[in-house]
Length: 491
Image 1 (spheres, rainbow, N blue to C red):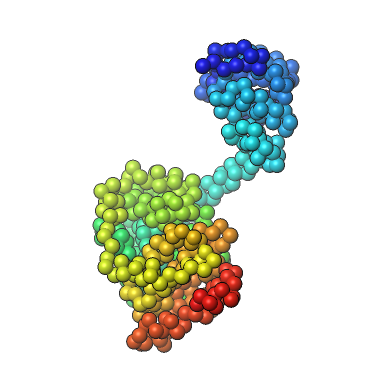
Image 2: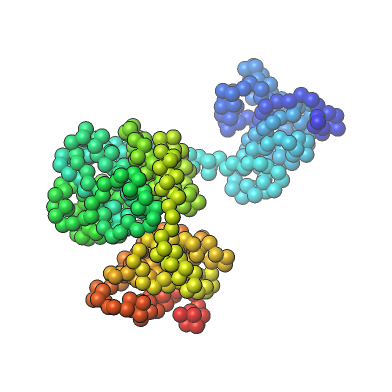
């Protein structure tokens, strides 16, 4: 149905774009739109500017965009850009457009950040603050430049090496750290033209059923880290952990040559490594490694592509946690290169009986206090079941943070999940376990371990857990601000 103009008459003429205000921003928008179409109408109150536009064969009208009558005999636009530097004029223009052409999509410039909400309230579909747009664009270009330079630096370093590089994954390796190690192998071989040998090293267990399938189906060769193997390595790299001895089996005083990580762990990575790249703005280290491969134009075979894609998917919980536009872009780059059948097999693994029992214990033993859920799963053989339990419990109604803990033959292990935007659970865990264990994470996820040392020979691990857990939980509760009297009644 034809739309009505301000005088009440109807018009059947249409145009693709209508630009209100043709200053520097408006002219640049016009220049971009002309790459697509010349079906554009421009309105500006400056007669000389309009005449200049007409001389260039553009359809332009001299009108004040704040005038309610400014749209008379203007064809019905599909999209309207309101780009003047007049705050009141832009606001009036949006009202006029929405009352005259309600189906038009309106993009408006906010002169300052204080008018963003007001312009949205009167009907603008998209409000842009030029300073913010510029800032985001500038940061995007800076990051792009940084990633390109870092990729070249890494390539130059790897190309100069001969011998063996040991790539250390974090303890109880997951798909993110494993796939990152695979990618670093590929980078090392490409840079050195096959001269550099790479060995992927790990400690702990590959316990999660999907992680075991991941390693087996992709035929990933990993070696348990030993002092003899470390002596055989001419160079050492760490992927997906911030420093030697932090969630990996390296002695803390070890000299490492490369550290690549995406966790926000302060300055732990500053240990005189030859190359350090830490990007907490990325959802997975696998995303960072994918970016290197793409920047350096290294061929990505289907196994590595499948591993990296699954690494990104697993660490972002299917792109629902800490996912950035970069993660999505890089995952899209990998997807056509992956083996879809292998991905299906990896993600469709059955749950083991032990994991099911741990999940059952976590549900049965849960305690909820002020949105924080605590649960003990007792003695476990498979530590990977603890984070699975934390993932499950965070989904319960009324739960903002879940903390699940259990005891193994060697450590007490904690896993936390968080969806409270006021809390950085990784930092809270670091503070709570400082001096008694190792901890870390980020705003949505945290983990910690406390070595049992002399208690490893204790026969009844469940009783030992009950004996030493109370003061640890009380310290954690104090840090996150849970009332002491409430916690005393609960713990």
